[in-house]
Image (cartoon, rainbow, N blue to C red; front, top):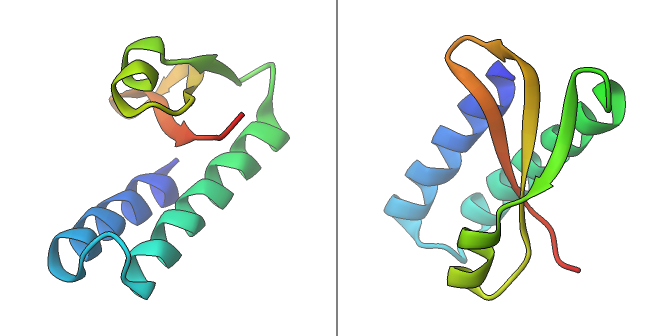
Length: 85
């Protein structure tokens, strides 16, 4: 979870500094997604599960899912992930 949070911060900083389409931005976004998928594969359904975020999905026009943690890790119960259907 700490890795996901750290990469998410790096992704946001890269987007702000270099734009959404820069190689650094897309690489950190993709790394974040890979870490989240690994978390899901290794710990579902006992510790983490996937739920659709209908509000954000409608706003962005794509399917957005959140990884929900069954128990808090630090102050977090979720890790956002974007997947296309």
